[in-house]
Length: 300
Image: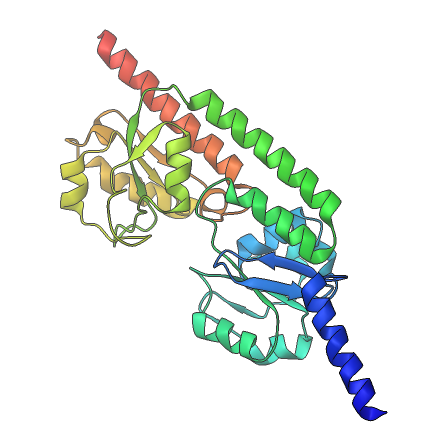
């Protein structure tokens, strides 16, 4: 009798795997397949952009732990902290017994994420590289959390706004751009980075798109040599005056000569989540202003 029962359990498991009945199967951004028996009800988010995506997909009330800087929407500020980009509190995460962990390939501690996966926790890894990837993540999170209706609506709205933005700027004259993440080390982005797609959407050309690595370090000489028409920076507001002043001494740069130094709020451009369209609109507005200055100079 015991052997018969065991056989039935095994056969039942095989049927579940084969048919996917009552199961949820999605693929994360690394290509790995994730299977849940039922919608996730205890989610830990270990990236701020993932927290925003989960809320936007309707799964906000299932989040039980987040990392530092998960501060949007307002409800995210009240969630338990279980670490930061510098490292996770693995004991705290294990104690929460999540049924889904959402990580970030480029920004989460790889060995800690792997450790959580080896402990048996389902892990979904995000790595959006294009603006449109956000809509796909919204849909997959909705599927994982059982909030498909809200997630699909959010994804459709995102795609509509993205298409409108692309159409509006598709035929604008190209503007060369240097995007600055950090000041002293002059950290920037290459052509595979999410921010590069934002720049291209607005009719810009990233002058360091050919560099290896997602966030290459460059030097002042290379910026002067490539002579961008616009410099965009994603630093905090308190640092922007200092950064701007540092650039202004290099009057041979087209960006400086034409007054095209712009700060983009980092939460809108460094987080590859739903608010990226708001960041893109600011980038597009900055590039449009630089075009108008170019036209005025041509007239003179």
